[in-house]
Every structure is written in structure tokens, then in C-alpha cells.
Length: 149
Image (cartoon, rainbow, N blue to C red; front, side, top):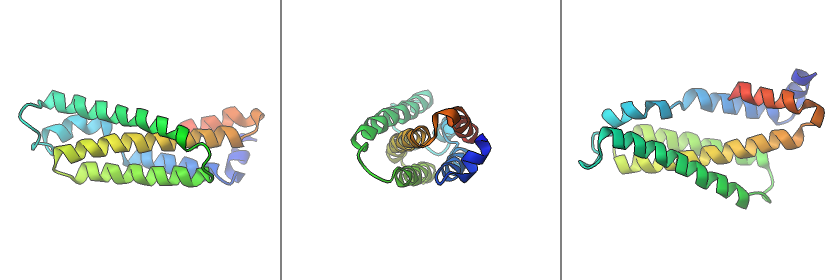
């Protein structure tokens, strides 16, 4: 019953696949120490390796807080599926910018913006799942989202 509902829903399969792909292909937070030691060698002298990792982690979470607050401003915007898609594309772009830039400050900005875009996409995606799913299938649809993430 739950799987049939998910597969026939107009948005859920796409949201799950999008979330799964972004989880698999943008696994960057755990690599902060490697990025800090190798690619971000241009960091300022006052910023140690441990400090660089701490800064990147903090900026990512700060971006998530800002992104979560921005969701409040987006509540009346239509087309929630497009919002998720746009936020996810931005998230992927900021992850690419982080990995491709040799400039530490640009990497730091990209990590902050990736955190914001990820929070927006995740919050709107979970809202779409809850709002469009009947009460008796909430657990199954939420389970599908947890499996995808």
C-alpha cells in the first residue's frame, strides 16, 4: 500500500531520487580535514589546520540556520517541487565551487551557501511529503524519505 502510494505520487519519487543523488554525490563534510590539509593550503597563516576544519564546519551549520530562516519567507511561494529542485541545484553548484576553488575564502563562502541551500531544499522537501500524504500513509512516506536520505 505504502510503496504503491509512493510510486504513483506525482512528486515523491522525484524528490526521493533527487535527495538520494545529492546525498551520494555531494558527500563533502566528512572530507573537510582532507580539503583543509591539501586543497586549502592558501589559507592564512593564523588559521591552523584544525581551525580551518572547525571554521568550515561552523560555516556550514550557520548557513543551515540562515537557510532554515529563509524558508519562513518562502512559505507563500507556489510550486514547492520547483523550490526543492532549485535549492538542490544551488546546493550542488556550491559543492562544486567548494571542491574546485583554490581560494580558502571562496571555499568558506561556498560551504556557507551550500548549508543554506541544503536546509532550504530539505525543509521544503519534508514539508511537501507531509502535506501531500494522507495521515494513514505518513509513516511509509516518511520512511521512504529516510531511506532516500
